[in-house]
Amino acid sequence: MRFWDIRRVENVSLNLQLENGKLEKPRYNKSTSKGFRVLKNGFWGIFEGNVADDEGLRQAEKNAFTQGDGETEEIATKGRYRMRVKRDPQDMSIEEKVELLKDLEKIIRDVCVSTKLVYFENRRVLQYRDSCGSEVEYEVLRTGVSIMGVGKGRSLQFLSKRQMRVGGYEVLDGVDEKAYEIVEVLPKLVNALAPPSGEMSVVMDSSLAGVFVHEAFGHAVEADHVLQGATVLKGRLNEKVADESVTIIDDPTLPEFGFFPFDDEGVRAEKKVIVEDGVLKSFLHSRETAKKLGGVAGNARSQGVDVPIVRMSNTYIDTHHYSFDELLEECRDGVYLVGSRGGETNPATGYFHFNAQYGYLIKNGELAEMVRDVSLSGNTLEILRNVKIGREIEFDPGFCGKAGQLVPVSDGSPPVLCRATVGGA
Image 1 (spheres, one colour):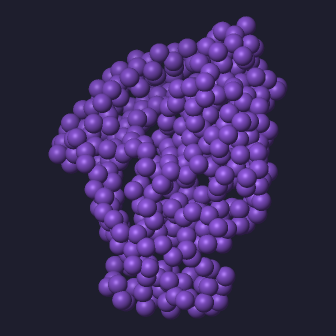
Image 2 (image 1 turned 180 degrees about the vertical axis):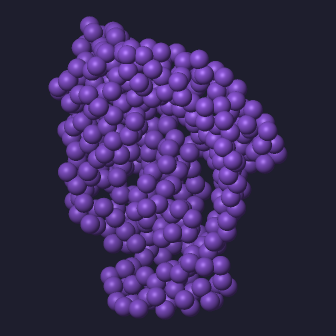
Image 3 (image 1 turned 90 degrees about the vertical axis):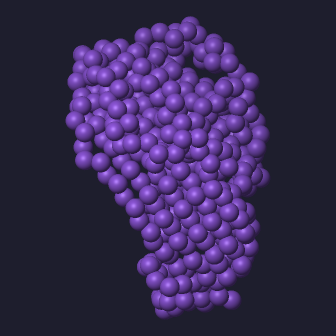
């Protein structure tokens, strides 16, 4: 049986960049593109082009030129969603947005030898229909600012903060607090100590623990990786894979940076419990992986009208009952690590290596001297089997790359106490 779908995506974006007080040329972009897919004899035919629907499907069918093992879950969805915002950025002048960046740059200027501030807004409109009878349309707006500074002392150090979410210009309310965090931390960071090394107790802040759950665990539950055998979690559904205190969720309905009302295969977004009380309950699926593995579709996403692939949205470790002070007491001696400067992970082996933005020694259950250039590594499942989880969650926004495509995501967590290997970045 032949399946087809058509996507029309309109993107309108504005980027402003202020580097060392100098404004780069504003970048405004508006694009409309259409993507067509036809599944015929188990093989996907793909075509992209701003042509009539019949012509686009005809071209896609031409490209389904051989046989394959593709199949798809038949789901019919109808719906329309338009995000309401308090202050539409399009109603604000570019001069007002530039002034915001200049005001933030003034705050951090005195503690930095180099600064870079970026403002962006993006409006995405998706229209989708398919052979199952689906007709879906949505409009979502994202707004954000990132603030980056380089300081110099005994060492040269980089620190960044960002405030990005779905919504209008109101997303940026209170963004100056991010700039003041840089003013507070960077002068100390440039003169901070080198970190200790070896296996030890580590308290990850919400940002680093969020990166951990996204990078080290989240990619391992994407069902295309499962089908490829490229994850340590293949064949482990309904098995205990973490401590009983661990519940991990992917929820595109939260009003965070990874929000979407329908995925790029027209499936209505819904909260997915991946791990519940330490037990692996589900993988994340597209229509095709859901059909092959018996899961629930709804996590197929794409950049523009590229081929939709299995992606996360807002992925987080749910709260437990430890206060931050109690986590420090439980840690006793170790390190408290804050933020992330990226890293790498291998879902097939479960090993990861991240760099924190900075940290503090923990001595006798209390925060002590600041440390810089800290790395964290270990095995994902080993760490999740022995953790203590805090009770106050925060989310961190960003863009996740996979198969050459970037999509907006958010990851979150309370602070988490674990055992891991620490070293210099």
